[in-house]
Length: 162
Image (cartoon, rainbow, N blue to C red; front, side, top):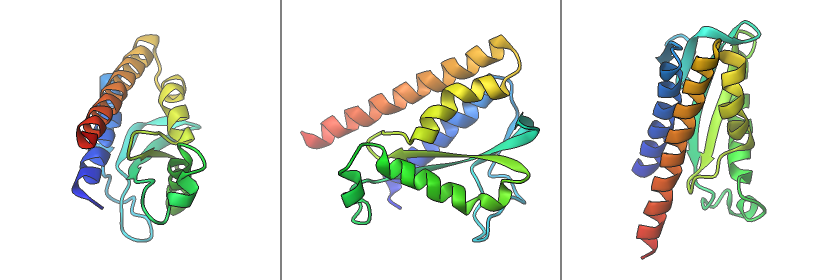
């Protein structure tokens, strides 16, 4: 994985983690004891049950649709590679699905989010946050920072093209 891709992945994880904090929801980064078969851990875990009595576990992945493996699929529609990545990530964390609610956060390098990610951001506030004020803080924070993230990606792309 390239350095810029790692930075964007870390930035997105930070946005999600801070959105929970802004709503007063405690979360742990890279929780120990939740390793998948290959020893890797998810990016975060909420300490309060999210849906169905299970805490939320999430993992952020930034993928390049221009990688040789994805080019043919990426040519069909924006977001296809992010959706494929979200499905694969869900399969990798399937062992956690009985005790936790896993949510893949997948985005293509130019800033196209997977359909599960686009569904997660607005709906998570309704499923998870208990008061209207907390819901609004979560939505406001996550939407504002995701907008800033996408704007910075567009600015970078314009600069790189010139």
